[in-house]
Every structure is written in C-alpha cells, then in structure tokens.
Length: 99
Image: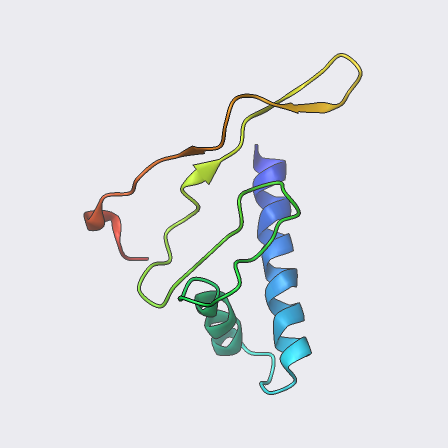
C-alpha cells in the first residue's frame, strides 16, 4: 500500500508539473502547482489521470480532501490484475473539509 501511495503521489506531482510546463504561462512554483491542482476540480476542469490506477483525481479551491473512490483488484495466478466488483466511493462528511 505504501508503495502505491508513494507512486501515485509522485505521478500526481509529475502530471501537475507537466500541466504548468505545457501552459507556458506560469513559473514552476508551489503556488502554480496548487492552482493547477485546484483547476482539476472546478466545472470544466480536467481531472488528473493516474492511468487507471485510481479514479481520476480532482481538487478544488475549497476541497483538498483525498480521493474518495477506489478500485479493488486481485492478482490472478498468472500475475494479471482483475477488477473485483465495481469502483467503490465513500462520502466524506462536510466537517472533514480543511487541510
């Protein structure tokens, strides 16, 4: 679990930096990265893909909570991944807002 968590964290950072570089309108700073991430969760924003490892990630200016959906897989005898059931989502209570 810690490996996947670290991998997704660095993938998220990489995707955010790529968006800043592609836009060519902002310097690479923490504030620019925050803006890019927050733009992913507003209406019309593009969620951040982890290539199917997690559901697309979205953050908004007023909600920085972690992902609330998960896909559960098992590894078959041949080493391939098999999705178990459907994507599962929990609903965070409003009092969990904040960061």
